[in-house]
Length: 174
Image (cartoon, rainbow, N blue to C red; front, side, top):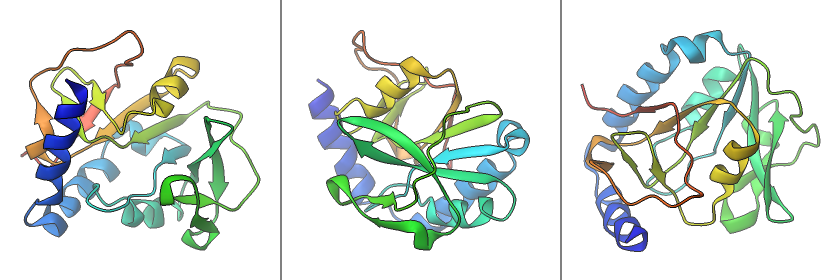
């Protein structure tokens, strides 16, 4: 079932029109979110392909927060602080990963911005199927926000025991 949803919503996301406009709406909602404003550290993925753009968010946060991006190591996702977008290179799954070596170990005053292909209205996500974020959230109790386009918000899907609920979903829905 999840694989069918992944395929369907990837196709929908790949054909989003007004992507830049939608990304700007999401950007403004994220930077004005009270949890984001109060956080000292932002864990954030580097967007690829048709994902909600996070590069603009990263550039914005680098001015006033500590920013860390994920890196896959030994089948585990860790986060490393970056000082600029130049601290990234192509890594696992052709995703930009940090070249820095200062790993996040203290998750106090931290929020996480999470990718997903689609999100349910009860705040569960369907990602790419490797379970990195679910494993990470099962170990760290961090306020988590998913980003997605309103076309990729779904009513519900069948969860399994590994699915971890996130705290909020921010979309371009007004």
